[in-house]
Image (tube, rainbow, N blue to C red; front, top):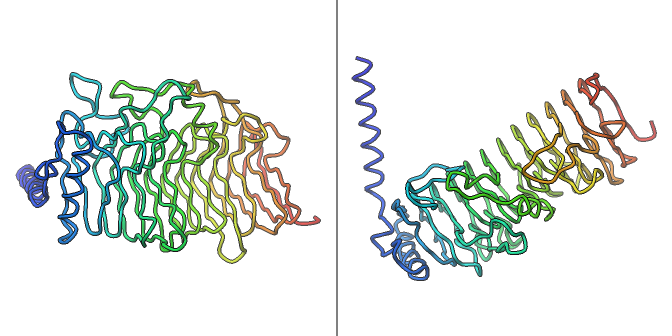
Length: 412
């Protein structure tokens, strides 16, 4: 009986998925073909989007053996979804007989404009973006492509979903830095993978009403299954750009959950006009794990929990810090550990200067609970260069594996 029920459910699921796919229009029906020139595919994809905007239709990116060559400048107009056949493919899909990805893949060749600009009420899901001409060995030859996905900077952009996306060879993956006159809202980015050669995977600014980065992963081994790799020199050049994999600013209650980065200078920048929650993270082989700022004492507060930071990639020990805090507001840090060590994928120091650096001169507050701190070289895990900082550490563990409890207050 159970087996019969399982079989029925299986075929019901397949039927639902087949029906959903049947309701989509394939981009090939509009003349987007793997045998076309990149400029022709860009024109035809735009025609498909123009058709779909009135009804809010979804366009299906038909899986192919040879990726669709395509130029940039695409406008994903309101209401339209681009849906492919793939989940995230963090080591790449590969053709059985050739070193290239297969499936719902765009081969982007345009270095003059963003690949696609998204408007309100849009979705991109299940697609791979491949920059087949990107340099893999020589840092001087890296192509600084414009962002793969960018919001509309000349109008309000609200309600965008980016899901199950993989980027190969991108320079900046997702750019949601809005013009202050045209703020964005309700941007959801989840299950996305890549390794941006600028060091910037997701950046968002002027997003009022809850931006969300969920389950995202940055790693230079993104094309391993295809048979491509970035050289150590290229990876070092990404770190040397001193950028952050994830950046948020001018946001209301931002949500960052289960985010990972490897071999970028910075992990996460929490800007001076932001607040929210950061949980379940791993920031590996970075110079700075988290850099938190704050412009006021009312609501420039971050709750940071359940994460690990391996800070070892600075050029000097003084710039290699798991966490940096300055400005105003409160930072609550719980169950966050930092440790360091060597890694052959990039040049590194194998250690950090401290666990937490608090700087500036404005009053701010920090609480730490249950933090494990290792492989730092300073005498103390906390470096406090702010005379007005108020800090309490409870039930933490220092690099000697001794309990660490401390209260720091002005003039005390």
